[in-house]
Length: 315
Ligand SMILES: [Zn+2]
Image (tube, rainbow, N blue to C red; front, side):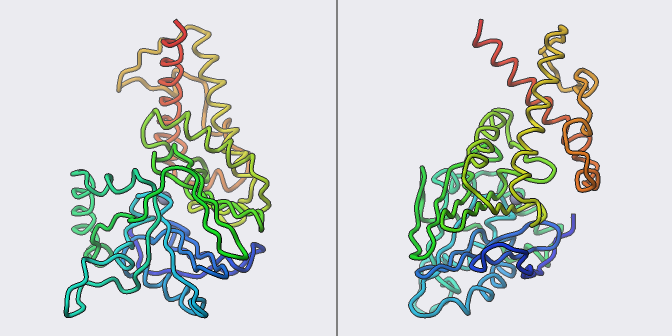
C-alpha cells in the first residue's frame, strides 16, 4: 500500500468535542484528547511529517499552562514512527537535534525493545527504500515513560485510564475515559477483525476484547475502523472469534488432526468461510480480499493451534 504524508481532521460525528480524530489516508486514525491540564496525543502516526500535523492540530489547545503528553498505544509503525518530534537526541549546545516539541511519550515497558530488534531496522530500511518521500526522515524513537499495568492520567475534567489490552501485540494499550464513557480501542478491535501478531496472542486478544466490551462505554473509536462503527464492533469481533472457535471445535470433534504443517489448508479442514463469521453487512464485504482469505485462514490456524495446546494441557 502506498502511504501519504497527509493528515486530515475528521469532522465530529457525535463523540465528545474534546476528542479530535486525525486520519492518515486509508491507513490509520489517531486521536488528540484535550483536557484541562494536558493535551494528549494518542499515537504519532507514521513519520515526523504526519506527527507535526497532529501537533499543529493540538497547538491551539496548548494554552494556559496546558502540557503536551504523548501516548503510544503500541510500537507498530503506524502508531509510533512520528515519535522523534517529541523526544530528540540529547540536547546539544547549538540547539540542533532537539525535539520540535519536547513531551514525554508514555508507552508499554515492552515497547522499547521492539525498536531494537534487527527485524525492525530491516523493515525501516525497506520502507525508506520503497517510499523515501514518506519514510526517509524517520528515526526510531521509543517511548520514554514506561508503564506496565493500568496507568491513570488525571487531566482535571477528563481522566484517561490506560488499560493493557495485549493480543494484537503484547505491548498494546487501550484508553478508557470514564467521564465521557468513551473507549479508544486502538488496534484491540478492528473492522473486520484484529490480528494477533503471534498465535499465543489470540487468547489474549479475545480476553482484551471482552475487557473492553465490559466497560460502560457509549462511544468507541478505533484506529482501523470507521468512526461510526461504535461499540457494536467490539461485539462483532468477539462473535467472529467465537464462531471460529465453535467451528474449529466441531471439526476437532469430527476427528481432524491438530498436527498442522505449513501446507495444511485450514479453511478446507474447518468449515468456516469468512462470511459465516462476520455480520451480513456491506462494510464486511467491502474489505480487502486478504481478510476473507489468507488473513481469515491465519485466524483459523491460530485457533486450531490454541485448541491443540489446550488438549495437551488437559491430558
Ligand atoms: Zn495499527
